[in-house]
Length: 565
Image 1 (cartoon, rainbow, N blue to C red):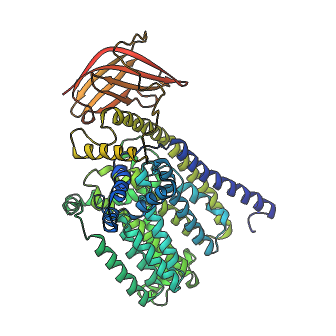
Image 2 (cartoon, rainbow, N blue to C red):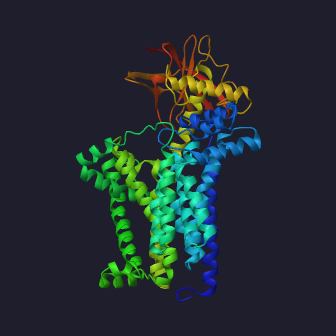
C-alpha cells in the first residue's frame, strides 16, 4: 500500500466492514421495529382484494384476469407473486412480513452494485459510503408502505439484475436478462425504462444482433402491458404544464437528481431545494463527462467523439477499453435512474411541484449518487482514493444520520396514525384510506370481512391497548380534565390540545357519538391532530383524550362537543 501500512490496512478493512454491516443491520432493525401488520390505501386493492379474487376465481382464466388486473397505470406482477408465495406457504397474509420481503430488494440492489464494483477491480472495504447512501430513510414512504416496498425499490433492483446479466455476454444470461426485464415491465410502469437503459449496454458493446432481439422483446412487452383493461392516466396534461413552466421543470430535474442530499427536510421548500439542486448539477456533469470518456475508448463509438476531448476525459476518469464491460453496466444504471427521474418530473410535477423531493422517489437519486461515487473513486490514484473515501464517509454518514433525525419521528407518527385509523375501520367501517359513502369504502370493508372469514387476515387485537373496546365517555367518572381548541375547516377537523396529558405520552383525540367511536393520534411532542372529516360519520360527538403511558390507558374528559355534518 502507498498510503497505509499493512497493519493499518487490516484495521481499516475491519472497521469499514463492521460499519457497513451495522448500517445495513440498523436499516432492517428500524424496519422491523416500526412496521405494522395493517394495510393502508393501495395495499387493499393490490394484496387482500387481489388474493380474494384469485381464490374465488373458478378457473385459471379467472385467476389470470385477477393477476394481470392493473392498479391505476401499473401492473404489479412481482408484488402479486410475493403475495401468492406467502399465502401458499403460510395460508395467511401478514403485511409486516410482506413489507420486510419487499425491502430485501434494497439489499439485493446494493449487492449488485457492489458486485459490479468488485468485478471492476474495486476493494470491498470502499463500499461503506454506498451503504450510507442506499440504506438511509430518505425513501421512508416506500420503505414503510407494503405495496410500495414491493414496487418502487423492487423495479430498480430488477432492472439492475437484468443489466448485470446483460454484461455477461452469454446466451443463457441474455435470455434470463430478457425474462427479468419482462417481469420488471409488468411489475410497475417505471419498469419499462429497463429496455432503453439495457440497450445502452448492448450498443456500447457493439452487440448488434442482441440489440435487435432486445428491442423486439421490449416492444412486445410494452405493447402487451397496455392491452386489456383501461388504465387511469391523464398524462397528456403533463405536456401543457411543461410548456407553461419550462424553467421550473428544468430546475426540478436537477433538484431531484440531488435528492440524496436533501438534508433540510423541515425548511421552506425554496431553501430546502438549494443543496439538492447544486449537487444535482454536479452529479449530472460527472455523468455527462464520464459518458463521453467511456464512448471515446470504444473502437466504434469513439469515432464520433472529438479526439482531444475524449483523450482528456478518458485520462481524468482513468477509463480504458478493457473496462468497457462494467462501464456499460454503470451507464445502464445511470440511464435508468435518470430516465426514471425525468419521467417523474415531466409527468408528476403538475400535481405538486414539491413531488421532486417526495420520499416516494428517493431511491432513484440514492442509486445515482452511489454509482457516481464509484465512478469517481475508480478514477483516482491510491493516495487520492483514500482521501476521497474518507471525505465521502463523513458526508454520507452525515446524510444517513440526518435521515434518521428527520424522518424516524415521521415514521413513528405514521405508524401510530395508521393504527388509529385501523381502530376507526374496525368500529365504523371506514378508516384505512377510504372516505365514507364511496365505492372504495364498500370494497375495502367487504374485502376485510372476506379475508377475516377465510382466516387469512384479521386486524391485530388489540390495536392500541387491551382496554380499547371498553372505553366510553358517556358515564365515565374520570377526574382528569383536558381542554382543546376545535376548528372545522373544510374537509379537516383540527383539534389543538391546550391542556391535558404530558407531551411525551402517546395521546389520541377520542370522538364518541351514540353509534360511533373514532381515534386520531397527536404527533409525538405535538399538540394538534388533523382529522379527515371524510372518514367521520355525521353526528354529534363528545371529545375526550386517551393517554397511554407505561402500558396504562387513562381517559381525560372535556366538556366539548363536535358536530360533523
